[in-house]
Length: 121
Image (cartoon, rainbow, N blue to C red; front, side, top):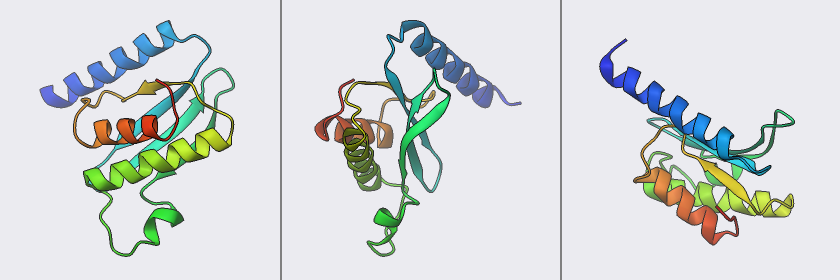
């Protein structure tokens, strides 16, 4: 395994452990980004299940034509979509799990849009 991947995995474990240590019964908003898409899930770790999810692969997102899922605008739309679905499910307070990704670019855009959509973290 190369050094860069090893450092990413170590940062990912460190972030997840810190979240679990400081959790106060809140659900977790986990974000994953790939080269082509971005995904967000609200997860209840105590029950071990996903409550709501949104990604650039959803029907609501793909209906806009041939938009790319790998840019800041797409991340913003996914943030709005996950916030809307979470608020509809009665979830307001979450912990933000960036999954080891730096809080920059698409991750930051998704988080800001989710905050504007009504989520507190």
